[in-house]
Length: 212
View 1: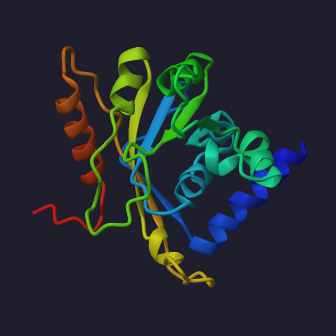
View 2 (view 1 turned 180 degrees about the horizontal axis):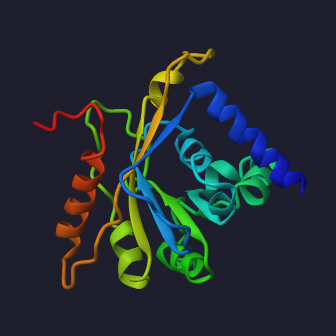
């Protein structure tokens, strides 16, 4: 119960701070096994996306995040595991002979258990002038290992401007989160073609993009 109240407080704070508005390209009925994949400019990206879901969808939607960051203190570990139910991925280099959980298998297991995921295929925050960094291969492999998963592109606008790097006081800017249509699986599609198509679907949601 406390964790749900904590989660609601985080959602209310995120919405109040950003005035976020969610745009849906098409209605998405509630269902398990969905992967929301988005652009990554800020540490708050997954919180903002998460706050735009219904309470029911939010409860079963788990952000995929770095274990090194979220296990670095007791408070972060508690919030990640009990409030966000984050799926933590070990990003540190394994020692010779050391066995580590496979991230793709971790994500596939969560989807098979009926959870949904929030994934940022760039793999790290994009602090460059490019709209998107090249996608890592995880999204492709998740689709291969769990073909029933519904992959939904999500463009997050303005959050990196609300709290620019080095600033302590958030700027009063309105943020928006744009949910696109789920990608349709193409039989036999290779990794490079799939990742290019996923990037294109995401960029197409950017409201600042010149669509002419």
